Image (cartoon, rainbow, N blue to C red; front, side):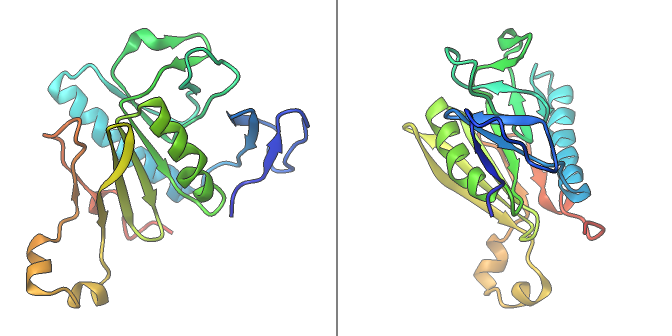
Length: 203
């Protein structure tokens, strides 16, 4: 399930891409382009964050992939390219990308990246002090919200769009509490409806 992993010393290449995308703990990860659904989900989430930042004059921005993020300020040999990085400190941008921990990171999982998103990256973001980490599962139409508490990520919330069968099986109490709204804890007046993120036209 994990995208092909190469050792940093090997200099081997994936047949589908000859571009180094991320280096984590000295290991190179080569990644192919995202699917149209993957790209559209990233665009929709980033748009909602940026619209909120503009309306509230927050001085933050949602940066999408192709921004190299160096979480360890002292090590420029390791970097990641998150699907979305929420950044509120312009002073940490430099010629190669961004040096420091974004406020919030979003990764849209795929069969090739899921293991890394939930393993190496999860631990890396936690250690670097990224305040929130969202893992988006397109097939499940869900967003998992992990919040840093005392240096450890805890699953604050998982918001899912239920299909008709699952929705009918909800108890009365469950129906009252069920919501498709996700709220980042660091911007508590921002609400994102996941129904606007996962559309029926996605394939």
